[in-house]
Image 1 (cartoon, rainbow, N blue to C red):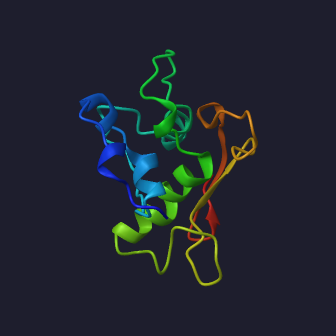
Image 2: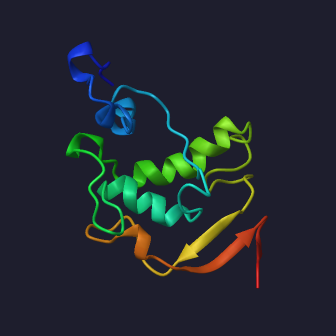
Length: 132
């Protein structure tokens, strides 16, 4: 990845507030989580905002430069968070030998035009066991 140049950084605080796409493009790893109660604890809501850069009420949060693709945000919420919590070797992705902690959604959020914030959880699995 290409390193960010000083000319690509902004003195505008609004543009510095959410530079995650620029950080990712420069080769940085991302981890995502909630700052609840400031925002929703629902990661699907946050994934929707990060990939559209628009809140549910239509408020645009940043320019197109800061928009992340859904796959990158999902990776930040899964493998990225597992890594920063010291659990990247046992969780955070679907792989042999990893803990089977996952959810099944009612739609493919990686499909073009699908808003992850509108997805609903159909099943939750913890350590390979479906929760009722």
